Amino acid sequence: MTRDTPTHCPWEHIEPDGSNLTVEDFLSVPIVRIAAHLKRFPGSYASSAGLTLPQWRILSTVAHHRSIPLKQLAEISASDKALVSRTIKELASKELVFTASMQIGDRSLACHITPKGTKLVNKVIPLARKRHAELLLTLNTKDRVRLYDILHKLQAVCVDLD
Figure 1 (cartoon, rainbow, N blue to C red):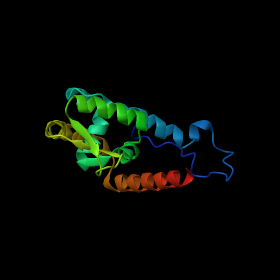
Figure 2: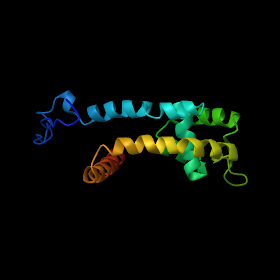
Figure 3: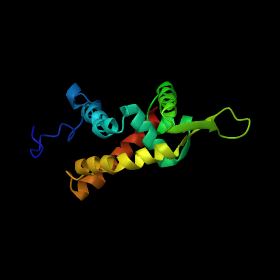
């Protein structure tokens, strides 16, 4: 299949019980394939900053929020708490972030970006924006808007199903 060649859509007519869908027709298949490519997508700009992919994802999320509770950071980054905790420790050892109690006497922690972390993100984020813009601009405006809406609808449904 080429990028410009439309294929027959197996989702055009779906039986209520899904009996006419093959495993290859399941929604998860193309999404997982795309996700696998997108997981590697930031590799070039993350490595240019001396970071692993999980480190870049966490650092850029913290930078966007400036300060964020660790629980929320795990949710937003779609990472498990153990990975977030380990990655925060790695970033803290590089003096890119630090953690602190959210309130006096509170055991929950928030992650904060340091000036050094901000400087690094500000250096790398233009490369990240350019790569993502290039990918999104392969779609016309109408398709980009539709894709955005569809993905958010599906995400909401998935959250409701959990």
